[in-house]
Image (cartoon, rainbow, N blue to C red; front, side, top):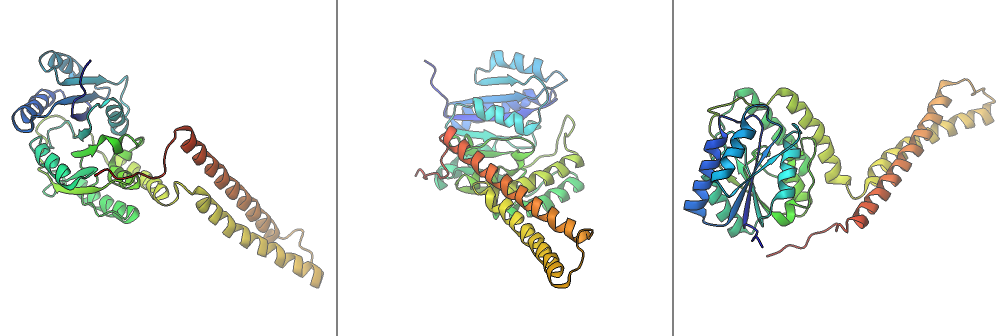
Length: 315
């Protein structure tokens, strides 16, 4: 029977043929020389179209700690990370980028901080970041927005170099661009988060996969995070609150029109205001029913998966 490793390192890659060999070598050296704990390296090949897959197959022969996972196509970083979380066997899980901008040498310090603080997550902070000025600017704006929405003081949500307790990260499901909001999701799950400055290098080889279109997708996912942070377990409060407000206004409009009809004998059948009032009442009913439906779905989800709404901290 194979003994599960203590630590799992997860690295999603897409067209990193120029970096993958050095990356695997450096991870192996760090663990063998400095960390000396049992480990596995899960490299998630996210549908690369270059020779990344072939190089991983070759590296696997000489590196028994390497477990490459080949996705059927390019799904995106969040899905690739989720595949890694699903396959990871370690009690601690480390994530990092595959472009060598994250420094594997920081892993030891992060593990030491996690143990000292009994943290559920250690989040890297690229304080001295080596990316183009446009990317850094938009990243700072996004970080401030996420901090405000999530109520979490983290400098760098987008840094992939992180350490997690498997017991908490496996409670979370990723899709869209949600990997960028992992600190907020861990906090929502009741986790303790600490932050540590990490080294950041310029990309030496390969091409960055970052684009401004990703920034806009992140902004849309931020709306989802805001909703989840406030209303995930009580969606009726959100939909019902809006529906009730609209319904009250629509009801007042209809009462006003009925009043002038009864008191003044005014014709109201052809008034646009009557149509507005009726439409607002209908929208109100739809929103309240949508809130009730969401509330029922949340309850079914918790019961079906035996998912608790709380987490007891493990010291």
